[in-house]
Length: 549
Image 1 (tube, rainbow, N blue to C red):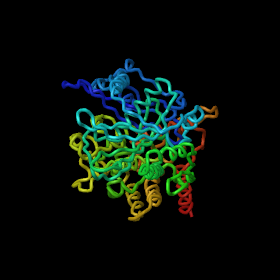
Image 2 (cartoon, helix red, strand yellow; image 1 turned 90 degrees about the vertical axis):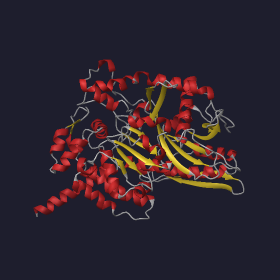
Image 3 (cartoon, rainbow, N blue to C red; image 1 turned 180 degrees about the vertical axis):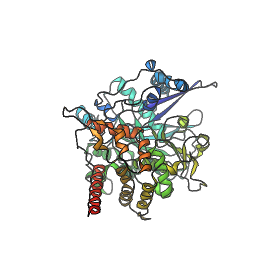
Image 4 (cartoon, rainbow, N blue to C red; image 1 turned 120 degrees about the horizontal axis):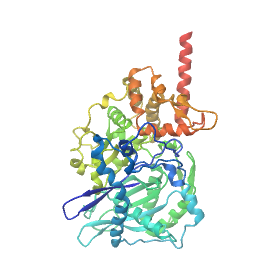
């Protein structure tokens, strides 16, 4: 979703548009039927206005709520929020107008397609998630008349022909957004003779709730003398960072020979089926002087971790610091990460979101905040943001949030904090997480580290809320179940755990999770979380049996 924050100012620019991308609501199966229950009024609307269920894009959202601002009667303490919410009625039209004005400077798109590659059948096949990617673009820094470098798309594959007007307009807006996230620094660039290549990712969530992942590799183009870097960006519905990093390696290798060499490789990749978890797809591609190469692309077995590399997170933070960040994220607080490198921000913020499995972060999620959108840090609602260190002063003047410095030369890790982060999690369970994290090796592979992290954090949710299904009452008429929240947390014996769970029940991540459970028939749960719950319950039964004897 593109959210527009309009700030009225008294200078030459009377209106500035600020956009931010949010991750969609996605729980266990990716399809959510939402109902607002227990909470009413303006505050509830403010908390939920940023959500777009994953199933909405496919027409699966059947009874999502609508909210008319004119019917909401705020209390006195909510009057201060009316101004921000009134902007919602004009945000989309303002955004469209801004982009239409910007289209006067429409960049040139180069395509090596010999013929249109999109057909109705293929487009449906891609939209169902079977294609590797939607398109590849090259974003270059071009010098404007004012002398500043501006990002523009100079190459696109495939060039999508045959679109109707509104489809073309929407694609142009998406492409414009891509340039923004490929070069979040804005126009502060100068020609370089050396530049360290880096790979990072971002998320675009459209107004209909459909999600697209952007994978970006920035590098210095071949040539002589000083020159600005350029970015290769792949847009895909699929989340698998490691696999797309390998694809970039192949793209970069062919780019060293000629841009024309990229087309046959990407065409073969686009026509290949995306493999199931643990499977491999082989792509044939011709390279001059080497002949036909066979490239193997393997998808990780644990699909929920395939977009994550925890190594950067644990390289930047200690075990204790990771647990404090996890605690703040579980309570859906405002969290900002500071770093110099874009790849560090991207990998850390995705890793923190993955720690919440089987729950999904439901609020604002921007792995790399472009400079033009830095005002998003002032938003009152929860967020996970990645901000470059040169913009740190615009973040640290905020309060009631957690600011985490990931820089190697930092003096303090937590530049801003609320102060209660150490007391959020039940002490015993917090110690168990730390004990499990001590099992990781210094030079672990990605798979080994993923396993250790999963065994550290997943049992936390198993032990705190793993008994949820026992408190969903269902009738025999096929009606949705009803979660008995009070009985659910009252059954917990530990006072500290019960206190935590009572608060966790108020989060949107648990609310959306349990609403999907209510829509499912009895005992349909599958996957790692359900497997761990069954194992834990069996273990408890054995322990009780031993005590009896």
